[in-house]
Length: 376
Ligand SMILES: C=CC1=C(C)c2cc3[nH]c(cc4nc(cc5[nH]c(cc1n2)c(C)c5CCC(=O)O)C(CCC(=O)O)=C4C)c(C)c3C=C
Ligand SMILES: [Fe+2]
Ligand SMILES: [Fe+2]
Image 1 (spheres, rainbow, N blue to C red):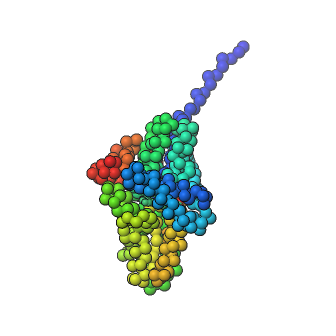
Image 2: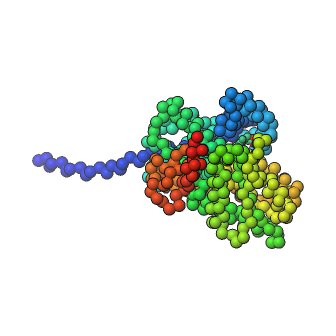
Image 3: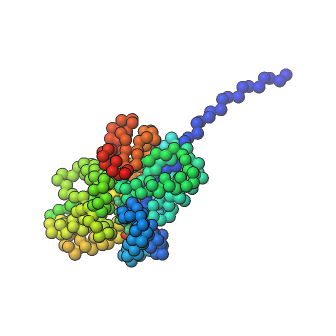
């Protein structure tokens, strides 16, 4: 006699994890000596960078790019003829992807959209579309928002996504200048290099920390760009965490490339002051999260030589974050936080109040007036 078949046990079905495409924004850099000129043309013909009437820009932008090609090529030659930015961003992308996937909440894939050299937004948007995400998170690798960097990348992304009809719910993170995990990771790196510098220096020599950020033409800040204010916020958060009594420190700005008036003090002026005061310096890049020509050449070669000439009694530098585990954990936290807070969290150029009222919400608000100026 046939026995009735045993009812089969219920099959455990775990819900499919949402597929999240994390798009990392950075500036990009030339991948060969012959790419330097077209990279610079892309940069100087961007209306976010060269703020002149549209009919002048293609001409003036090309002239400025042409004039800048020689000094820029000389800098890239020191790095073997190319920028290391893409490889370093790829390492950050892989590290972030593995942290997010290990957490198990989402199925994450990190993509890279460079602004002025490949892979740019069009290629990135096509790769994102082919992957078929449920959600997209736009995550700048610039801690502080500037219309010249993150703002410009957002505009380029929107155009690229529209061109190929990529319409997936998208969260945009404007900035993370005051994110506690970002400040913790940065402060740890600064403390390490501060201690190493102190160990090398004669105890009688004082050490000053120069938080060096990329500069901006002053007119861009006057027009409402929140970058300088956000840089100052980042420095305050890091200094709080360093908790070094009577820390001698200053915020300064490097990499001026146009003749207009740029925000100051310049990093060069601060080197001159350090030479005059006979104090050693620890230079901390505060607005770049990866090494590239402006850290490896400008800071490590040019400013070091300048400091020697000026009689600065010691020159040290904190590395950029690259794939530092603390920094990658901070990025993963930003992804989690942005998702849990809902898609309304950030708007172009600023952020609305954190809807979940998290303490220390990293999405610091930009005042309504400033936001209006930025988005105008
Ligand atoms: C008017 C010119 C520029 C403004 C404004 C500007 C803002 C800005 N840039 C960064 C970060 C990076 N800049 C990089 C290269 C680079 N930037 C400019 C000009 C302006 N940047 C030039 C001409 C170049 C090319 C290099 C050179 O000619 O020296 C890079 C990448 C470089 C690499 O090696 O890959 C980064 C990163 C920030 C954060 C910023 C304002 C907030
Ligand atoms: Fe720049
Ligand atoms: Fe929040």
